[in-house]
Image (cartoon, rainbow, N blue to C red; front, side, top):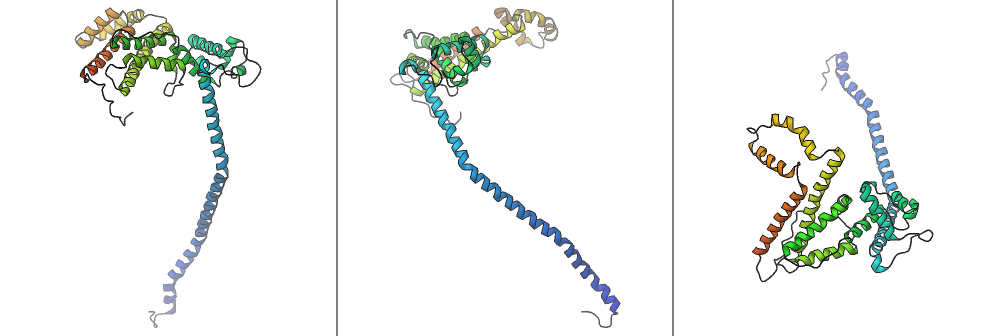
Amino acid sequence: MADPDEPAARRGAASEPAETQGTAHARVEPAETQGSADARAERAERAERAERAERAEPAERQGAADARAERVRTTERTLRLLWRRTLGQPQGSRGPRQRVSVDEVVRAAIDVADADGLDALSMRKVGGRLGLGVMSVYTYVPGRPELIGLMVDEVAGESALPAHAATPRERMRQIARMLWDEYHRHPWLLQVESSRPWIGPNGSARYEWQLAAIDGIGLGDLEMDQVVALLAGFTESAARASIRASHTTRASGMTDLEWWEINAPILEQVMDGECYPISGRVGQVAGETYNAVSDPARSFDFGLERILDGIDLLLRRQPASSPAPDPPRSDHR
């Protein structure tokens, strides 16, 4: 409460801060107004984006449906091409009467890949070998990925599938050696994406033959599939190492022996027997035996025999009266 005896001038001075504070609030007000405007503009922009997305959604759904339908048509056409000898030769998808056969297109593609590798395979090169324009090749096959699928199945049918005889161990050895030889005839097979392979007649016949080699020896159905996959996976890895070593020799222009003769003088100075007694001993024996850095064929033989030892041990542990139960499914892939 103001003192009535206080001079008016002092009372006026005391009330000044309140007036000044009010003036400060008045100065803030434009900023608050601007903030409200910005918020309204942001809400309007979000609403506009949502409206545009809603308008575009039917077109996107239609585009996805069209793409899926095209994949279905491509898959059906490719499967019919794979099984053409069973279902009959398919007619060209468009254009004039075909001058060559699908078999000739596939064989030309295999020749290109054998000569230059899978990366060099193109529809233009295939057409060039057959005297066809690049667009004409598409009247025979849907595209490059599908052509590769036809190539893989074609080479799978190159080797005869002999009747099974001898022991289960020898049959499994034969499975692996057939794949080893195939990879070395066609190294480009190692570049093919195989996680979702095309299922053709030759690949199917070979899988049946592989399973028949170990049918009735004491394995469950899943174990049979896994044994075939184990043999195939090991052989692929070993063949990759072998082919890479051959490629290195060709690319460098020198043999492993020549390469070692260049490296040996310095390495002998820094890798004395006292520091590296075990690797020195083993390396000397290996080098003298291989006459090279490694021997991929010997490594393949050694690894294959150890795998077969393991399968033999698994079979000996199974009850003689019935196949082994299928192993529980693992959540780890």
